[in-house]
Length: 297
Image (cartoon, rainbow, N blue to C red):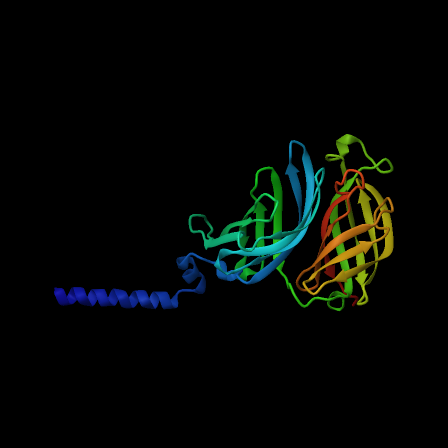
């Protein structure tokens, strides 16, 4: 009996080892719990829009990037435009205080790589998110979990070095939506606006040349009023893959569009508008968007 028990024990161990060796990588990761290897030492850039409930509902927009560091730490930068509050450029996250946690959460069905992020920046409240990482770490899906905010973010892998005007010079197409601050020259009935902002959308194309110039055209809808626009401008990209975009007469009122630019992956650019009202300091345009490279046949 003793020899039979020992034999059964060895057989069980052998079968268990064979099962582990035959298990798929996903099954092995599920048993290990942690899934941060999908994103560690990688950067993700994004543009986003949403709303902030501050007693009144105001539109928000932004763009930036985050980098997942070893040991659950994070770094990155973001520029925010919040209606009624202002534009907050280049918020830099503290790599010692900002953190994330990721695991294969088997308490939920289906089990996916998910977790939380807390981003800390000097002089700002914490930015908290829940996130889900897609297969292979090619994309992160995030939702803001701080009270009052209704904001979702999709992040894609991006470079953070080695960029230049020459590297991004190409023809881009775009479709964007946002909010414009009502002015005496451009206003609508209060029931058609949100906290003093009217909705707008536009779609068109832009060419960036290697010397820093740009030419563009689009069709715009300002709360349903349709117009066509075109013009020239300039841009500059820094080696860290951030930059600026200036369109001198892009807006319906003839005011310049000044935007911050983030270089994305595979011919993508993210922008967020920086313009503010000279008197109140609040955003003229709550706008962020994505430009995609396009080619003639």
